[in-house]
Length: 132
Image (cartoon, rainbow, N blue to C red; front, top):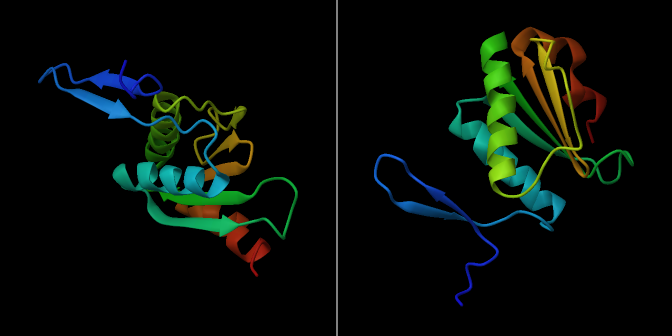
């Protein structure tokens, strides 16, 4: 038996090549936040920020903020985070905003992900609210 027992295997339908994915179960919150930011960047999210919340609130350790270029893009970005995290064995505790096209929140316990349209992000200005 090899050491790949704990990895998900994804097979590319066009090439038949297997991609081994490291599960993120048990990963520290910083690793989760960075992974989420990477997934958002891969789908062209704008102005991605990771805010360390450890000394500011008990709600979470990190918030990941990102902006979509349209309401459709906001939903696509949220869907991509859910998909990529699920492929790595991590499911959100809750998702809010699937019916709201301007703001989507994914709750991964220690990491909250906020994906906004530009106007909504500017209106709520979470960066200022949680500034150091």
